[in-house]
Length: 516
Image 1 (cartoon, rainbow, N blue to C red):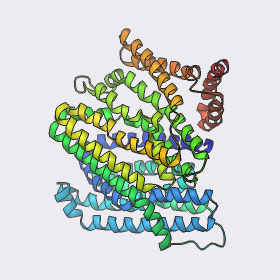
Image 2 (image 1 turned 180 degrees about the horizontal axis):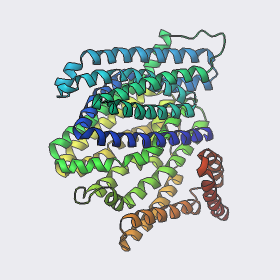
Image 3 (image 1 turned 30 degrees about the vertical axis):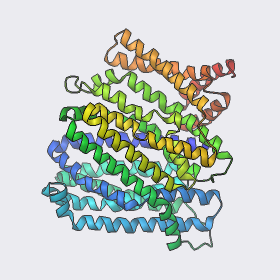
Image 4 (image 1 turned 180 degrees about the vertical axis):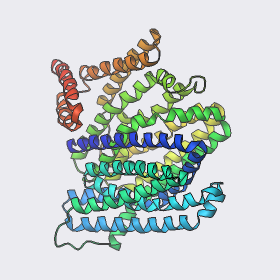
């Protein structure tokens, strides 16, 4: 569990760097290209995102699970076959789908996208199916399965740097929006090829084993991955149905407020995505009846909740001043309300959250995850039909927050029945109680004193985290063994480590004074 926590930190650092570089690049592109050309650039990349849903077929999840499982079970003779079969299959499927995109670029541009002028951009983007899907994401899945999170982060950051560099060169030499698309494609191809080189430099297969493309191994990988792929397709269809219902019943200015509010979801995904990424290979080491799984699951839920729940609630506390700082209040008056509802979608970690799905997937029950996705799909569509026509955008936001609760109920019952595991409800209750106490205190401080803008943002955030951090040991949510785990993890934080150690040291005094 400790190694996985360190892996999460490494991934989080890589993701933060990657997102910052990407954000700066996209802002620069938007300003240099202008709104019309930047819109065409965005439109031209849409078919690639759809194509990747069909190209993967669950292979990346299979690679993560089986690489981790065979490493843990000490089956080196199977590892090379898993890696080579998965890589070759992904390259072949991406070549086929990318080739179809290339040859049908004309109809895609004129009929599907309704912009015939982006045909050349769609052709350029089609090569990105090989770069992003066949190479880069596949290599990253293998690195995750081998738990080499540093290489996964390196390839991700490398892609963002290459895209920025190629965009700068191609746009300044006069290629415009086409150059931006070509830069995106070229960066993914080059980063993918470098990833392949890193794969064979850092992953050494056992001598004497002839592992290559294997049809039997392919059947094993697809039998696990296809249900997950179908579930991902369902999620994509569900999102499109939401968008369609939203367009029917919500005015365009409210949709703009919604788009501005949902941008803040990245603040929480900085935390949840790295944790989710490391949990799947962690759980893949075990079988359903292994006794260690219960403790690991409850620890994962606890630590994920400790990190994500306070971030969710502090965003709600400062939603109004944060919105006023970043957006014009007269144009985006509803961002604080929409943000406060939308961000609750990330507030379920103390009840299992991302740990449940990764646990079930990790022990090989991909069919169960498909059923969960079906339940979520049905729940979401029913809620959207009932709520959006009556309550508009608020109805859609409530739907987004609640749609996966049906799937959560199914997962929590399945894990209890099949594995005898459940959430440590008492520990989760203490974390939620501590987080809500800090929320009430910070909220009252801002709104009783009528603090505005930067003062409200900084003082509200500071007050929240001071009360939360020292409330954890006082409530008993943080114990001595938790502190020892956290102290071992902070060493990976680089220049932030001394500050983190100071905070943990102060919190430790409260734990010693309150050993219960």
